[in-house]
Amino acid sequence: MTATTDNAHDSGTDLGARYRSLADGFAAVLDTIPADGWAADSPCDGWTARDVVAHVIDTQRSFFDGHGIDLGRRPDLDDPAAAWHIHRSAVATRLDDPAVGDHPFDGHFGPTTIGETLLRFYGFDMVAHRWDVASAVGHDLRFTDDELTLMETAAAGFGPALYGEGVCKPGVEGASDADRQTRLVATLGRTV
Image (tube, rainbow, N blue to C red; front, side):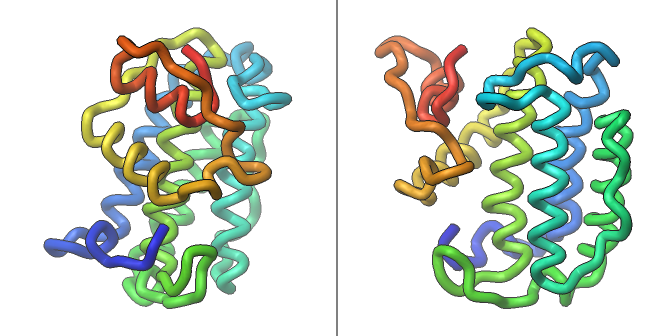
């Protein structure tokens, strides 16, 4: 999460569109979860599939709140997929104002902007936790090459902070002949 602008605003890339793409990928998985699947244990210790969605919503809400950006009332998690759609719309609407994404602050890894942090850290979170929710109900979710690159780059950039309290549990040793996704999942402290 170093402060560079190569991913956040390069080649006219629109922050809102990038967020919507990541958020819609998360939504696509949530929309497939059966009603009885929300109570299933996820790969995140002590969390159900519903807890994973709550985490993604609450951490993004906390991030925006910490920068004085009100996302409105927290959506009801009785229906986690519906709650995500409400949350995603609230964030996307705020990102339609370019001043929001360009707002600078001193982050954990140095000077950054809301947009850069949103894409690098919270984007990583939406992709990683998409796999967690799918795995909770036995769905085989495969990342695209672009998603794998995003996740590998982010994990390497986080360094030891990746394994800090509340982030990922320590990486596990993957099989030497494992495919790229299996190696990534192992780096994130998860097993297939």
